Image 1: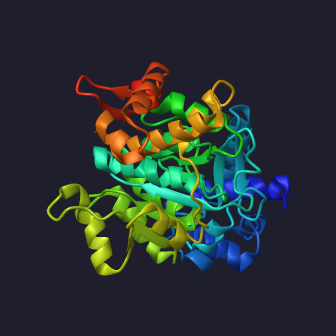
Image 2: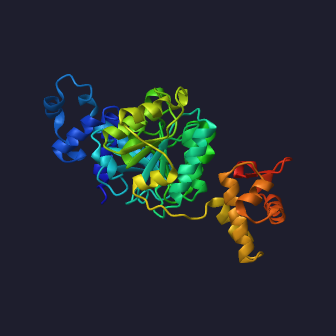
Image 3: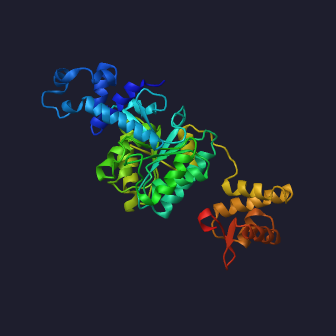
Length: 387
């Protein structure tokens, strides 16, 4: 369904006027049935509904509609679509939230397809993510990519957990949506501009904001932004957070929307896990025990498939080695992945292939960049960042 051009302009105008208090805009839309009707009731009618001293009454006028029409035109010129409530492309789950915006700015090559009948899973956390948090973020996304359901990964484009989630999604072949605390025509932090371009260019992925163009990053914007992350997703996963943090706000907001909330347990006394542990204790979030447990809780069928390193190696060696050697290579890679820095002797014992076979195959894997072997003959999987 598409709104008429006039209704789209009116929705954009309502979003500009009531951006900070979207509940009022939604109440007006529910009462009058359309944004166009809101702009047609006149000052007396508005004062009767909003009160004689409402600061918004004077803003609902023809001048605001002109600004909104210009806003939509400027957005389109920058490759950004304004999608109003009720239109194809507006997230269905978000309409359930009483504080959902009158419209969203979506920067994508395919804005009408981004929210079309797919699962959206948010992964959020602290900007100061630890190695533990980043590693689990990647593990969770890799597990989600193996289910066959291919959920869309949603986060906020910030440092730490957010950007780790977006990049892991792209690396695993999943679509990703970055919900921004600025206008969709700018990127914060600026260092992530290149990543944002990758997201916007991928079919099925998008940059999303409810802020008008040219809106700069302000602290309060991030809090308001978090409700969009929670609202468009059926589940929110919090990897790490202090007791007070943006990730905690998103998790609590998701809980208030009756979404599923999951979190990664942490060590007692660890500041980066105190928020997560509190959510578990309070019953707000379910603990993540393992990737399999999380997938089952989300309703995704668990499949024992080869992980990314084994698949890549199978493709790489499939035409040069016989099937039995490819199977041994896959088994060696899986053993190294599960036992980081395992020795060649340990690999031989674990796989049962014998030391000479393991030495030959790990030498081949090291030479081709799949693993690294240190001076003490301890093996580790090589990631893209270390190749």
